[in-house]
Length: 196
Image (cartoon, rainbow, N blue to C red; front, top):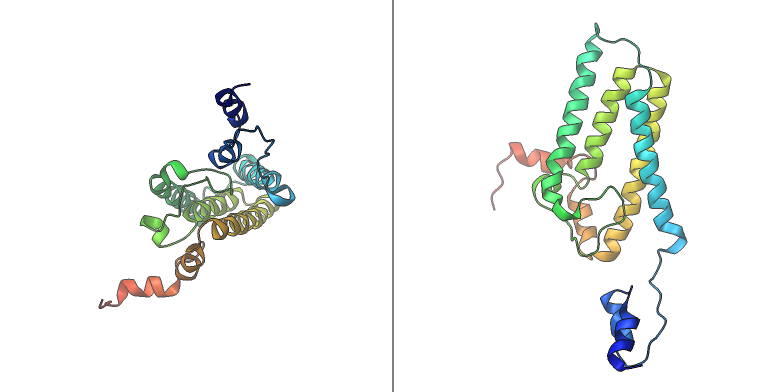
């Protein structure tokens, strides 16, 4: 087998760094590294749980709250949450994914809404979920909302552990910016003059 064909054969299905291992003239069996402990499966479970809970919140039969002040509040939470999540989309660009596994080479966003909170999409989902739970007005809705909080906190922990591994400056970003709500010093900066 020619060297060119051996390298071509060796590189099929491997990443560029794995290809370099094959470039020495010998075809080597190299496997892609897998996430330890079935992390990819855990990420898929978290995403499935998130969307399943949102479906329960949206479609489970609700009590009629139309005449109550809670009806208006539920719509305010729902619309505010959706708007917050949608504001984050342009900042993420090609890095957007529902998975808590960061896309390779996507980087960390610290501008726009990501300068205020690290996870505005999750915050938006929680606000919208609270609106759906309030609109639904049942114990099932409350339970689904509490479960959604737990799932999203799990997604945040999962995602941030990988971001700290990939990007050394991420730990500093965590100290400066709140996860789901802006830090108090960031909010205070709106009303106080900052000399700088």
